[in-house]
Image (cartoon, rainbow, N blue to C red):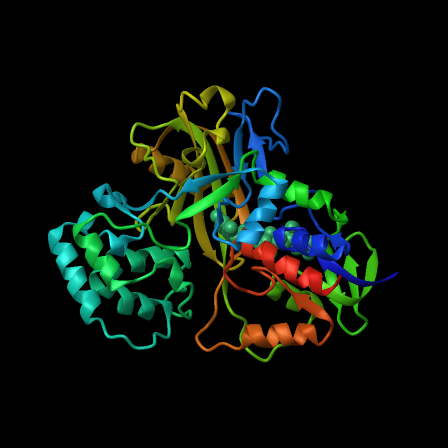
Amino acid sequence: MTTQAFILGAGMTGLAAGLTSNLPIYEVADSPGGICSSYYVRPNAQERLADCPDDGEVYRFEIGGGHWIFGGDPAILHFIKSIAPIKSYKRHSSVYFADDDRYVPYPLQNHLRYMGSDVAAQVLHEIVIAPKNIPTTMSEWQLQSFGPTLTEKFFEPFHRLYTAGLHNRIAPQDAYKSPINISQVLNGTFNQAAPVGYNVTFVYPQDGLNTLAKQMALRCNVHYGKQVVHIDPQRRQVSFADGTAQSFEHLISTLPLNKMLEMTELAIDTEPDPYTSVLVLNIGAIKGPKCPPDHWLYNPDAKSGFHRVGFYSNVDASFLPQSSQSAGDRVSIYVERAYVGGQKPSTQEIQIYADAVVAELQQWQFISQPEVVDPTWIDVAYTWAWPDSSWKTNALRRLEEHGIFQVGRYGRWIFQGIADSIRDGFMVGGAFK
Ligand SMILES: Cc1cc2nc3c(=O)[nH]c(=O)nc-3n(C[C@H](O)[C@H](O)[C@H](O)COP(=O)(O)OP(=O)(O)OC[C@H]3O[C@@H](n4cnc5c(N)ncnc54)[C@H](O)[C@@H]3O)c2cc1C
C-alpha cells in the first residue's frame, strides 16, 4: 500500500509533525513520547505502572531521567500550556565536589568565591590570560575558556564522564551551556552572581510529562507496535518487524541518523560521528540527612562513574508517594552515566553499577534505605561530531535524495530539548500538510 508520506517515531518531534501534517505515525512502542514519558513504581516493588494508581502511593519517574522544559519559543510554550497545564520553576543546581563535600552553584565559573580565595584568584588570572584561539576539540575549548586550574578540578573530569572519554577527540559543542563572560566571572568572585545559562527557569506539566505526550498523541494518528527494521531507499519502502511494509513518496523520520543509515544501507564515505549512550538509574529512597535541596548536581568525582544526579522530588513533591509528599521523608532521584555509543553493559554489570551508586549515595548521606532502583538504557542519548566532520551533512543529504527528511534531536544529530523538538516537528509537519 502506498501513502504519500508518513512519519517514523512518536516521540515529541514525531507527534508535533503528526499534529501539523495529519500524516500517520509509526511507532515501535505501545505508548507515545519516546524517552519523554513518565511511569510509576510502588515502594519496594519492581513493576512499572503506566498510570498513577488511585491511592497515589507510587514514585513517579521518567524513562530518560528528569525532563524539564527549558527555554523554547514562547509560542511553543503557549501550545504546551494549552494542552497540559504546567508549573514553572527556578533552577537550583550545583557542582558537587564529593571528595571535599563542597557545593558550588552552577555555573562554577561564576561562583569562584565558593572555591576559596587562593583558587579563585588563580582561576581568575588564568581565565584572563588564557590564549583565545579557535579550539579544535572539547578539551581545548575547556582549557582556553576556563584555564588549567578549573579544567583540572572540574571541566576535565566532568567531561570525561559526560562524554565517556570522547572529550579529547570530539569537536567543541554546546558552549552556551556553560557561558563564559569575564564580567560575570569577576562579579561572582566577590558577590552574588545573577543566574545565567540556558536553563535558568523551566516548566514541567503538573500531572507529569506523560500528559503532554498523551495529549499530543490524542490529536494524531499513531500506529503503535510498528518497529521499522529495514528501509529500501530505491523502492521507497519501509518494512516493519511484524512482516508488513509501507511504500512512501516522502518520509519524515525522527529516528537517529546513524540507525537510518544502517536501515537504508546507504553508504557515506566519511567516518560516522560518535554518540554516547546513557544509563539512567531511577531511585526512590528514604531521604538521607545530607540530601541537598538542588534540582540536580554535576558530579566530577563520583566513584561509581555517574556525571549527574537529579532530584525529581526537589523539583516537585508530586514525584513522591502521596503519603510522603508533605512529610518529605523520601526522595526520588535520577542518576546518569554515559557510555561510548552502543557499549551496553550486561545485566550483571548494570546490577553491580546500581549497587555501587546506591552505596555511594548512602555514603554521601543523600539517601538511606532504597525502595526502588530501576535502570533504563538510552542507546542514542548524546550526539557528537569529530572536528571538521562532514558526516552529518552528507548523511542528511543522502537520505534527502531518497525522499527521507530527518528531524529532531536524534534525526538531525543536534543537541536540543523538548521545546525545540516540538518546534522542529511542527515546522517539518507543516511543510507536508
Ligand atoms: C539523558 C537525557 C536527558 C534529557 N533531558 C532533557 C531535559 O531535561 N529537558 C529537555 O527539554 N530535553 C531533554 N532531553 C532531550 C529530549 O529527550 C529530546 O529533545 C526529545 O526526546 C527528542 O524527541 P524525539 O521525538 O526527537 O526523539 P525520541 O524521543 O527518541 O523519539 C523517537 C521515537 O522513535 C521511536 N523509534 C525508535 N526506533 C524505532 C523503530 N525502529 N521503529 C519505530 N519507531 C522507532 C522511539 O520509540 C521514539 O518514540 C534529554 C535527553 C537525554 C538523552
